[in-house]
Length: 284
Length: 302
Image (cartoon, rainbow over all chains, first blue to last red):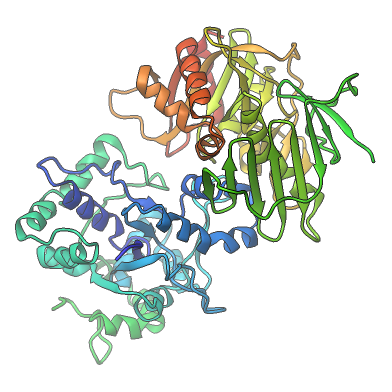
C-alpha cells in the first residue's frame, strides 16, 4: 500500500530511537546508521515545506499555511518516495475535529507512547526548565511547539498529552501500530519487529536483531558526543538517559498527582497505572 | 493608469503596484525590461513540466498561487501578471510578488537567483546562502551595520558570463529582520512594520557603488555542530560545491519546469569555479552574529 508512514509521538517519547532503528534496518550492513543521516523526512521542516509548496512558509500567515497542510502531504505522497515522515503533532485539532493529516496520503502510522511521568522529567531536562513547567505544558490543551517564524520548523499543535495519544490511537482512521517506549527497552527485538512490519520493512529475525544492536543507546550517545545532533532544538544533550522509571524516582507526590489527575485514563490504558490508580513499578 | 519605475537585479521594471523596497528609477526612453501589472491569470498551465502544491512551471511560464489570495503568472522574462483575491492586502501582495515570482522572472531572463543575501565589500561580493531561518539576513545586516553595502536580501541575483567571475546584482534596499534577529545585532531604530507579519525592514547606509561586483565568496550557512578538531569554516570544492550551490538556486523545481537545467548548471559551475565556496556551520547554540561575521571578515581578510 502506498502513501506516507507517519512516525508519530509526543516529544521525548522515543521517536528518534525508532527512526534510528528503521534507518539501521533499511541500510543493513555492519556500520551503525548515523544520527545526523537518518534520512527521515520531518513534516514540520520549513525547507521541505517551502520546496513542496513553492512559497516560503515564513512568509505565510497561519491560516494560509493551515489551508496548505493536507495538499502538501498529498503532494509528498504523490512524489512516491517511501521515506517515513516524522511528526510530533496531534492527529486532529479537538476544537473542530478536523484531521491535520491526510488519510488519502497516508499508508499508516507508527505511534510511540511513553509513560508521561518519564516524559515530564525528560522534557524538563531537554528544555532546561522545571518539571512543573513541563507538566503544565503536558496538561495544556493548546500546547504547541513553536520556534518562531525564523526557526527551521513550522509550529506544531500537540494539545495535552492525553489528547495527543487519543487522537492517534482512536481517531486517525488509518492503520496505527502503537508501541510503548518501555517495551522498546525491555523487549527490543519483539517490539521493533512490529515497527518493521508496520513500516513495510524486513522482519527477518537476523535483520531485526542486527538493526537493534546497531541502534543501542550508548551508540547514540557516543555519536552525539562526537558530532552533535543536528535535529536538536536546544543546547541540551538529547540522548541523555534512555531508560524508564525516572518519573517515579524524581517527581514529587504532588507532581505525580497533577499528571495522574489529568492523564490517568490513558495511563491505565497503557498499564502505567493499575486499577486502583497506583503507578505501576514494572510493566508487564 | 500609474506605473512606478524601478531598477533592480540589473533590469528596468515598470509596475502597477508600488514597492517601497525597490530602488526607484526614472522612466527609460524605451520599454521597460519587465512589466508587473494586474490582470487575469490562467487556472492552470497546459502540460507543466514541474509542479508543486502552489506552482506550475513550463518553458517560458511560471504560475504561482496562494489559494483564495493571489495568483502570479510569470511570462517569458517580460511580464508578471498579478491577480489578487478579494480583500487581500497590498502588503501581502508585495511580499509574495517579491519572492517566487521575482525568482521566476530572473531565471527566465537568464540570471541566477540564489536563496541568499549578498553584501559588497572591498574584496568583492560576499554571499550568504542557505535554507530559511538559517541566518542569511542577520549576517548581511550585521555587515550592513558595520558599514558595508547590502546588495540583496533573501533572493540574491547574479549575472553569469561564461569564463568570467559572476557578478552580484543590486536588489531591494534594506534587510528584513525578525525582531529577535534585529535585537541580536543591536539594531535599535524601528524599521517599517509589515502589517501581516512582524518582520521589519532595516536600511543601512553603506557605500553605494555601481552595484555590479564580482563575487568573492559564497558562504553556505548550515545549522549544525562544529565537530571536535573541526572548524566553523570548511572550503568546498568541485562536485560537492556544485551540488550544494545547485540546491540553493531559487528554486530547483522552477528550474526544471522552465527547462533551464542546462543554463543553471552552467551558471553554477562557473560560480563555484570563479569564487570560493565555504560551508559555514552555525552551531545549535548560535554564536552571536557579530562573532560569526568576525570570522567571515578574518576569512576574507577584510
